[in-house]
Image 1 (cartoon, rainbow, N blue to C red):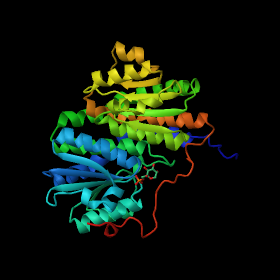
Image 2: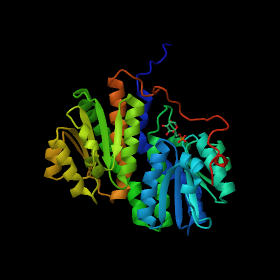
Image 3: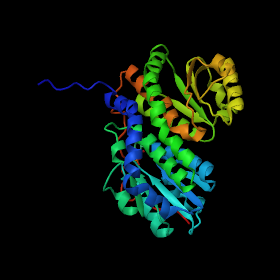
Image 4: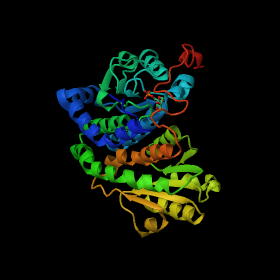
Length: 368
Ligand code: F1P
């Protein structure tokens, strides 16, 4: 029987387009049997959350930290594991109340294992891991683990694992803060966004087919900044394109010098900062950029300044919609990579996990 020929980007595209079904499955399974309730009980009352990750998982940490800060009203921040290992003095933690959350799809990224060991042994902190693998070193090093094996990918880059782990962490924030309305809103997202995601694929593919870009810029504020960072990385990983990311209003302070029609500037518009962000959009459009605008709802100013406008129109609170914005890098990246004759399922130079030599990055090498 003839072997099935795999098309370039086939696995990645399937994983992107199936992710809302994955979200529903993760919600059901992580709550079934009380896994999340037990985690919530164990870490309730914590007054400081430190989200740690590498690559996509670091950008996920940024979006999760923003959600925790806004929903639970306690201190929450995100750092790449390397900062903790090399500059531990820059990452002070309150030993009694701090919960480090260790985010790693594979559960075996060397920097994450070393971070877990350092936090548990040298800082005497009880860590919470979230991963899409089972029986990996991170789970053995952490004090507690949320496992989402159903969200893992066959392909190299993180797509549904990113959004699934984000949503489960957001659900944890809702439970810790006793905000059932926010929890309910998160659970509605898969049903509301699933049909929209299916319609977005041909629109993004058509846009990519009809334009040639030399550079890409992603802009976002507040909780959308982590999503803008992740979108930048997706485009780089899947299409080997040059992409940058800024806080939206920061783009005015110099980086806008690169603007031209061959630069695609993608705006992840928030509600809270909408007016100020659309001021930037209009200015950048006037400078000649090509613009992709993603908003939950857009007024005429944004409609006029957008070369491609995506209105999600999700009847949900702003923080409950974060995962839906991940398509901005996922679909643009995979369609651009395929257009460039690449295979996003096996991106150049990349592997699914970064495993370091034994000696690199141990905290005792840092001066503290
Ligand atoms: C983190 C990571 C990914 C990146 C690549 C290499 O992996 O850096 O973000 O896209 O796949 O690994 P993990 O710690 O989340 O497994």
